[in-house]
Image (tube, rainbow, N blue to C red; front, side, top):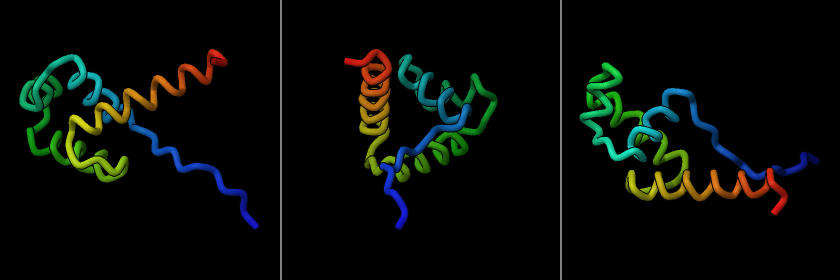
Length: 79
């Protein structure tokens, strides 16, 4: 019998960069322009991340990722 570990989706470096820029207040258009991608490319990555993390909106995705990051940081500190 396999041991069940909780599924923890990970982000690629590109996905991390997109999320970090959005968290800094940039719009999708600004992110696309700065990263030299088409807006639809950024939308594609956001939709894949939303599906992976089971989020309906980008705002929900960002909130979910912030919460999981805080949880991981607390676990590292031992709180």
